[in-house]
Length: 119
Image 1 (cartoon, rainbow, N blue to C red):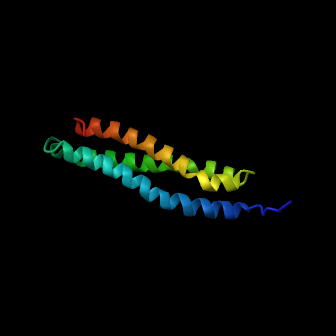
Image 2: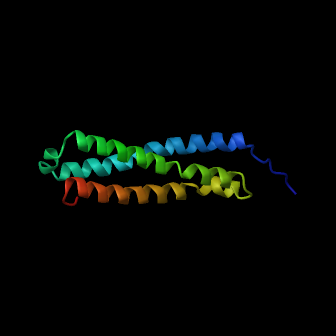
Image 3: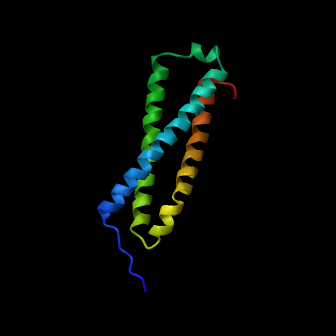
């Protein structure tokens, strides 16, 4: 029987931060590409919508998207502290993929509402 070393809570937090903060760059990049694409496809009408209120709305939505991204942390840390840690570390990209897909769909709907049309 091989002994496995149980990670400390500190190790789990450190690993989660390393993984998810790198993934946050991909997440935000995907959402930005979607919003910018809808803006560009709907020019010049979308340019007419540019004002302070739109900028503030986009800022609030970006913050909320990043708050939602943080939902991955408790799931990741819980899984790392469980008996399925090794499998979780290999397959947590699935959670990232589902989260990015969900956020991308929401961002698409919001971009359509802000800029009109479809890309």
